[in-house]
Picture 1 (spheres, rainbow, N blue to C red):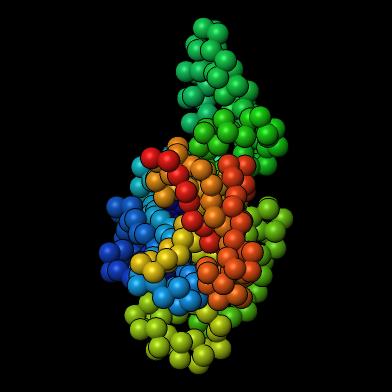
Picture 2: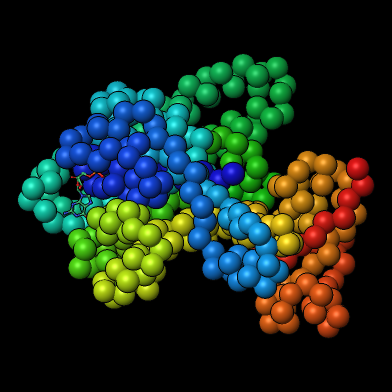
Length: 364
Ligand code: GDP
């Protein structure tokens, strides 16, 4: 599955958000830096109204949403790359994530200590990014030293890695994150495998006070501008509100959202934004037993999509009976869609589209 690492300075609302996301008290929020020491991992159902619709039409007994993993990564402070705070341990946790959800304090509250003694999310973002850049520089230096030996031995992969690491190093030495390096398509895979921290896409999560949860505030507006300039994205959320919603049942939550003048929980937007940032899509398998959502990267072929369910489906792939979501819902289910000629038999080269309802045929 896909993993988002939640990072941010102490006391910005990471644990509150993580708790709301996972509805557990596992990551206790407290007005105390370094309160969450162990990395907390939570699997979160990806909200998708389409899945409920499909299940209703097909009369599916069970609804199984697709999931996304969130990791609450504590201990990122100024000087972290030099071993301040929790030191290097958390950097390894970030390395394993596909993207970073960077929580920024955009709320004023004199009762909640800010580590820098002021609210400035743009400056906070720079503080964290600097730590990540320093960590990248350090790991690049170490790796280059090792790779040079392999290059002398004529290792072609090592030559490519050295070239890419040096390009990243040059950018970082100018104070630019590695994601600013333009990489050829031929190098894209090797580049990803370097697992540099500053090539990971960033979703800035602006934690605002309750009454700004809808439209944000002046601080979150500054963050949105910064995100756009960097090619990253941002969402506005009130961790406090999400915490409250997470304790309500569905009906109460709807009423609460109405009262607050909000259309949907901020977490739904956050997960969707994470999805978009990672270029993820959803396809569905729908039957009387279950309706289920599956996550793929945009551009995934039908056999690869089948492989998300089971390796055998990919190896023995014959074809995918495919109905577009709109056809399935508009025509009222699989049989009517089939009768209307809207069920297509797609082969190995088919690129799965977001919302496709698929049925795989395969050799065992
Ligand atoms: P972390 O250190 O980033 O994990 O931060 P926490 O989630 O533990 O939050 C630190 C403190 O800030 C807690 O007392 C939270 O209740 C409080 N807090 C979190 N979000 C908000 C918010 O949106 N508004 C206000 N006023 N306080 C918040």
